[in-house]
Length: 136
Length: 110
Image 1: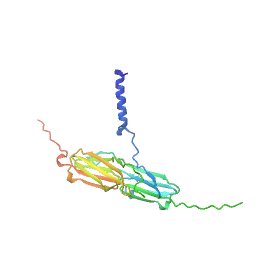
Image 2 (image 1 turned 30 degrees about the vertical axis):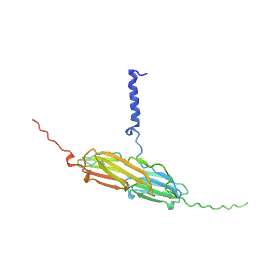
Image 3 (image 1 turned 90 degrees about the vertical axis):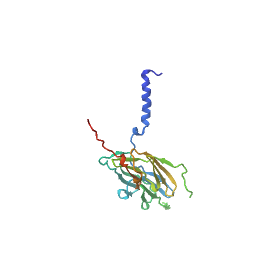
Image 4 (image 1 turned 45 degrees about the vertical axis):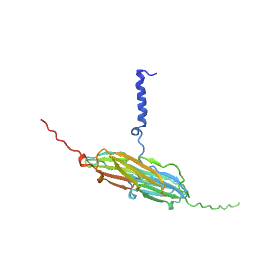
């Protein structure tokens, strides 16, 4: 039942719901690039969007089944007399990804093009060895 | 192997843009990773900047669209606009119209 006393409550409830969904009031999302991994016939591909990053600013290595990516993006501060409406974020990434055992570490390749890093992790050709069984 | 295993409609992203304004120019910087310069269209019409970029797979199929319309808050000289796309970042330099720059107006007291 709407009374003069609870009518404002309903208005505030509606406003609260609206504000919760407004992009400005959502919890800030992590600005760091998120790797996208997908499996292919040849193995795995890891993609990472690194806009503004050149090959010199990127550290990438693989060691004992762990792919290690290091990259950072800074944004210049406003010059004197300049105002900035900023949506982009500065970020620093230092991430390790566990790579499946079947990946051939020596055959891993990476390309950085148009701000996108693509790492190809080919699967090692399966080798089946028969295990001799000694009768005792 | 046939063209695309994934047959869903390409996704449309709204890229993030920074707008830097000073007395003489607007600079707009947009993150567009994975978009090649030949796949990016930039158009200025009636004070609105339209960006339309296509991201492709290595085979050339369309993977995503990146679109944004930015209403410019200042008047610019369309012939002086420059656009560069490097490392997936688009930088647009838009010189402001001389007539639109801030002008101090002297106040005469009596």
